[in-house]
Image 1 (cartoon, rainbow, N blue to C red):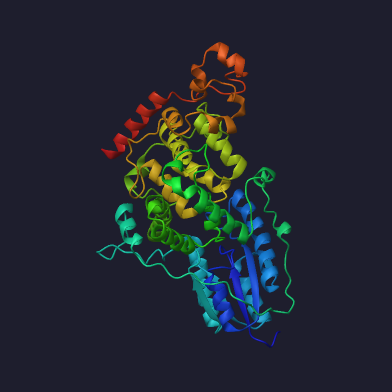
Image 2: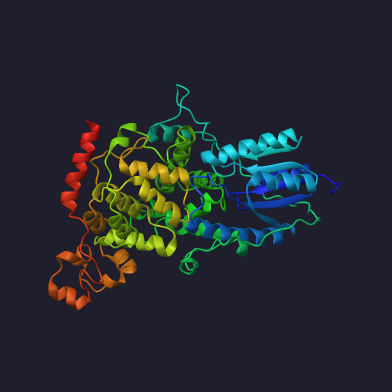
Length: 478
């Protein structure tokens, strides 16, 4: 056993050096630092990491290791299994007197953390957890009655004026633990999904690279963000959601940056506020999940538990594979498979189609997104799917059913997004790119499109399926 007292930093979703209160606290101890990551495995975890998240995690670990080595000469100890036995063993073997980590807010993982904190205190270990991923703790923002918010707009009004903690500087140094601890290798975790090769082409890693992406967004895209973010064929969104989820960039930094931009460039206030509103929506979903821990499994509006969903596996598979016969839907799901990400406007169209036209449960969509999104976040996933399905807090009204053809014509007017992800339709004239089944035989032949072979007919009639959905929802409302 080591005689010198040591500090254990348990890395979870805080893959950065800047504005990281865990690292600042570790430096303040003046003790040698052990950096630990555990690939946690629990049989009773209802939401283990999806395949795309595992891929992102692997890249994040390798990237953080490079940054830690370059900055401090520190190595990450990698382990897999249940967290408490691993942490306990390291604490006992290496005289760890301080254990620090960034908080997680998924209900199952919160319970794990509470137990570990209790056990460490019983061992007389100084254990502290810190908010590293949100602007505010989910329990911190309350309405005038001291209760949690159920409607977004009043939540947004409160959070927009609520003070955000200051940004912390990167620790100038961390004392190196020079003992030996057995460590696994990232490649031994088996985190690469079967389609990982195509994901590599769409993302970059490294803290400085992420900061460069952010700066480019501010300088190039923020000015037109309020409008351009709705058009999937242009680079109008920040694409920062996976970096935020995994803590590779600080949401506090974004908030303070945007406040500074609004002060220094008043002409950008509207766009900057629009972006802040998106950050607030992210907070709102975490707020809901904390107060309603069964949000991923049960509708927030309990009357929707009685709705009759389809169990047609064939329809689900066609939706997952982007073979519905509705080009904007199929393009979105192909983008998801190739990049691990989907444009936000298209996410809404795709989700509405699954729930309200195919009449498949929002939970099925949530599961697919959980497995294929690199920014898969339990609070966001549950909150957004329930919003679309009409059964969540402050949800879209049940009668809002996106028409995929109208949405495509409005937000992909030249069909560029569709052509990118559905190259089999690229040769169709623009009027028919949105509805290939209505194209003339000559146009189909000229474009090399054979309906029912290289591109499917629509899986459902949109008008008929809309009426059926309205009837089902009305029966619940009544």
